[in-house]
Amino acid sequence: MRSDRRDDELFDEVRLRRALRLEAAEMPPRIDLAAIAARVQAERAAFVAASLVSMLVAGLAATGLAGLIAAVLPTVAPALASDLFATAIQALAQMAIPASALLSLAAQPTVPIALIAALAVAIAYEYAQRRERVREVTS
Image (cartoon, rainbow, N blue to C red; front, side, top):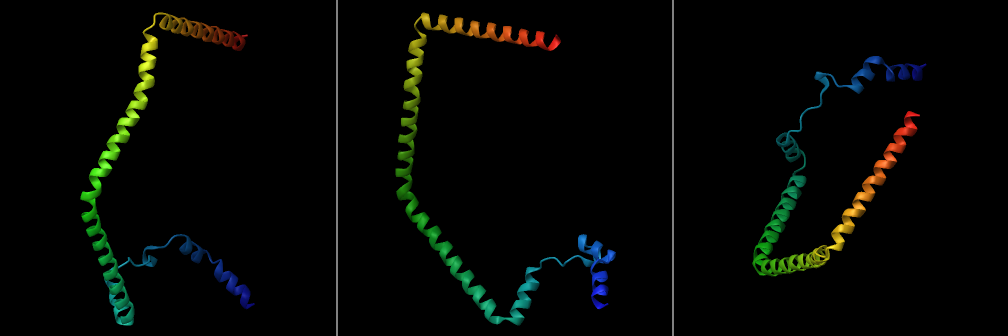
C-alpha cells in the first residue's frame, strides 16, 4: 500500500509539471560568487587558503611565461620572419614556373586554335545531348 502511494506521488501531475518547467518561485538562485566565497570562508578556512595559494602560483606562472615570451621574442622574431619570407618566395617561384610554361605554350598559334576547336565541339555535343533528353521527356 505504501509503495502504491509513493508511485502516485512520483507521477503526480503537479510534480511532473514542476520537474519539466520550473515556476518563477522555484527558480534556482543565481550564482553569486561573493556569497559562495563568504560561505566557504566561514566554513572552510583551509579551502580558502588553498585557493589563494593556487591562485598565487598560477599568477606567478603566467607572469613568468609573459616575461619569457618578452625576453625571447626579440631574438626569435627576425629568424621566424626571414624563414616565413623565404617560404613565401619559394612557394611563389613554384607557382610561377608552371604558369610561365603555360603562357609560352599559349604563345604558339596552334594551341589556342585547338583549344577553341575543342571547346566548340564540347559545347555542340552538350547541346545535342540536351536536345535528345528534351525529346525523350516530351515523347
